[in-house]
Length: 212
Image 1 (cartoon, rainbow, N blue to C red):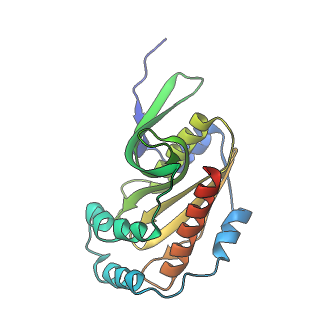
Image 2 (image 1 turned 30 degrees about the vertical axis):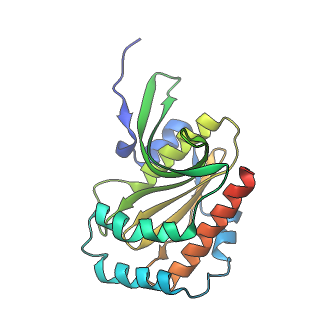
């Protein structure tokens, strides 16, 4: 068998993921409409302070600054802590494709999964913290390949959820079988930030229910 070079997650475009794994993108999914209709979190000063900070600096932060100064403290407020699951960051995942002739792998920025030391049954992904107006890659493609890798690893065909961030814009993604859909953008420099927080709390609840 001819050896093929391992393709990194960061090299994928979403169209390539669709073609390699037979995925179909839909305009929406009922769960995305459910997220849209969640009642926003009541005003919270800590969230508002982060919103103002993002508004002031989103045009100038690089990816690490965006992650360190906004995303990490924002997600910390959600308190993704449970007895049977935890946050895993910078964990390597891989998946074979084209009848196991090729492999792709990469580091996943953030996932909620069962386990303490090793992620099992990944369920929710927050991936690719891209700075404002950066166009040199495809954050959706990188999120989708991580979600597909988890879908294959889990081997249970249950729904997976994800999110990718591009500066001030947050996009939520649902993968069900061979179908997926992407939400409209939520602007974290606006009052949308309280909707984003409500959505993250919803994912926390679903994770706790799944791994109860």
